[in-house]
Length: 441
Image 1 (cartoon, rainbow, N blue to C red):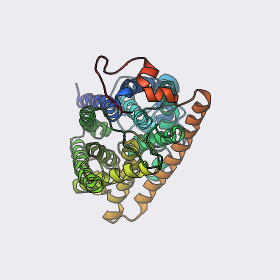
Image 2 (image 1 turned 180 degrees about the horizontal axis):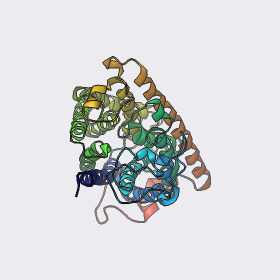
Image 3 (image 1 turned 90 degrees about the horizontal axis):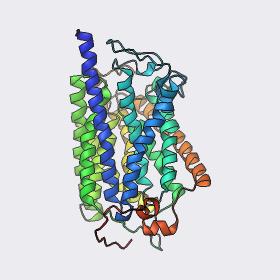
Image 4 (image 1 turned 180 degrees about the vertical axis):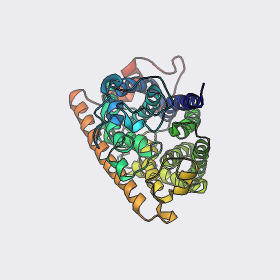
C-alpha cells in the first residue's frame, strides 16, 4: 500500500469511528430525555428517540444529502439527489472526490464515509426536537415532522454554511454545527412548542410555573455521560481526516468547555435557586458542549474555558426565563441547543484566532480574528448574519410544517391520554411493567 492509499485508509477509519461515536449519542439523548420526563411517558420518549434515526437515515439518503452538499446554487443543492445518483462512487485513490458533491471535495475519504458522517449529524438535529415537545406530542406527528426536518429544513440550512452556500461564501464558520445542527434543532423545537402549548398542570392558576420532576435522574446522568463521550466524535471527527494536531486541540477545547460549564451551571443554580440542581448541572455540561461546537478548532484553550463558563451561566438563566414566559420545554432543549447554539456561533466571532487555525492545519483562509483578538467586528458580523438568517428560515419553515400537521393529523394527544400517559395511549405498554409506580401527575 502506497503512502496515498494508507492516508485515505487511516482518514476513513477515523471518520467512521467518529461517526460511530456520534451515532452512539442517540442513546444519550434517549436516556436524558426519558430520565427528565415522567414515568408514564417513558416508552413514548424512547420510541421517538429510536425511530428518529431510522426516519432520518432514509430521508437524508434520498433527498437531504443532495440538497445539502450537492452542486447547485447558493441556497440549495441540485445534484446527487435520490440515493446519491450522479456521484463519483469509484474506489478511494487518495484524491478528493468531486462528482456531484464538490462541497465535500476537501476531504479524500470515500463518498460513503462522507455520507455516513453527515447522516449522523442530521439525526442529531432531528432528535433535539423530541425532548422539547415531549409528554404531549402525537407519535405520528413527530414522525412526519422528522421526515420534513431531515429531508428539507436541515439540508437547506446546512447547505448555506457547509454546502458551499451563500453564508460560506461570505466567510461564516461553524466547525461542527452550533448553528447547522443545534440551532436548527432548537428553532424547529421552538416552533413545535408554540403550537403545542404547555403540558397540563405545568402552570398554576396565577401563571407561575410548577415543577414537573423527571422520574429517573440516574438514567439522565448516564445519558449526559454518553453525550459527553460521543462529542469527542462530534467535534474532533469534523476534521474528517486523521490530523493529529487538529484532533487533539479540538478534543481539549471541547472537554474544557464542557467541564467548566458544568461547574458554572452548578454555582449559578446554587445562587439563583438555592440548591445545586442536578438537572441544571447536566444541562450545563451539554450547554458547554453545544457552545464550543462551532469555534472548537479556531479558539485557544483559555478561550474555550471562557466560552464554557458563560454557557453554564446562560443555560440556567435561560431555563428560568422560558419557564416564566410559559414556553414549556420538559428537558431544557431550547436552553441547551438553541440558546447556546446561537451563543457558540457568536463566540467564534469573539474569540477566533487565525493563528491557531493555521497552526493545527485547519483550512480557514477566509477566517478573521475575533473581536477580542483585534479582528474588529467583521467575523462577529458574519456570524450574526448567519445566526439570524438560518434562524429565520428554520423557524418559519418549521412553523409551517407544524401548522400543516396540526390541521391534517393533529399534533397533540387528547387531554385524557395526556393525563393517563402516552405510554398506554400511544403504545399500549408500560416502561416498568410489574412495578408499582407512585405519581401525582
